[in-house]
Amino acid sequence: MKKDPRVIYYSDELNDEFSDAVITPKTIDGSWVYCHDSLWKRFTHIFWYRLVATPLAFLYARLKFRQKTVGREKLKPYRDGGYVLYGNHTQDIGDAVLPPLIDFPRNVYPIVHPNNVSMPYLGRITPSLGALPLPDDREAYRRFLKAVERRLREGHTVMIYPEAHIWPYYTKIRPFKDTSFFYPIKLDVPVFCFTNTYQKRRFSDKPKIITYVDGPFFPDKSLSLKEQKKELRDRVFACMTKRAEASDVTVIDYRRKED
Image (cartoon, rainbow, N blue to C red; front, side):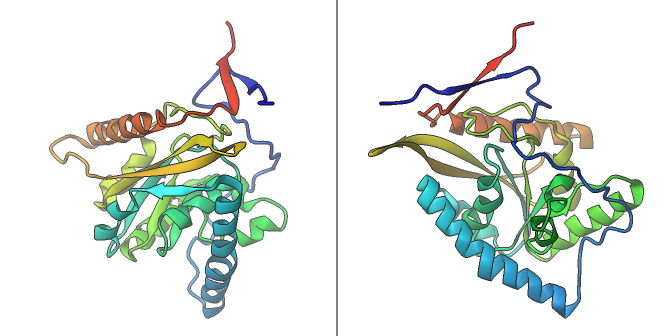
């Protein structure tokens, strides 16, 4: 017998958070090291990213969600250089493991909330996986920007979830700010996006994830910086919103609270 969707009530699409994790975040100050150059740190990155995380991510995505990516070929012409990849934020573990599969075999460096480097045990590993936590002070911000620039200049992918907060199994695209679109404009790199959609499976009530990749998107250099950010954000938002219409399963019914 098919289950009715779970209902969650929200009041603020920009700021409500529905992750089950309860974490006290570290303060990311000027002492935080974003890029390590020692042989040991390079080894730990290869070990955790390539030998541990990537195989586990493949198994998790395939076994739990029967995940499939559509449009990966759009990335191929741009794989000699860096680019910024945006996605919708609808899973806790899934959103950590899917980008390396979508953009395999490139290194993906996600911009994350400090929570992601503050978890017991796992928080010690996420920096080796490439996590770039958002800074808390001016000196940390300077180091953070240099790290983002370095990873893009090295030809890697910087991953951003512009919705910022996790809404599990949400099938639409929530409004998001244009703040993070500063990075590709400043560093003159292409933008791509992916949209995870939830679709029916033939022999199971659990949904599968079909991921659609779109792009490249480039800023309109005839506009001011402020206008470029908004215009680029609006095109990515419109594309993701259209792709999200492919979802045909509702696992969680999100309803706005009555005033």
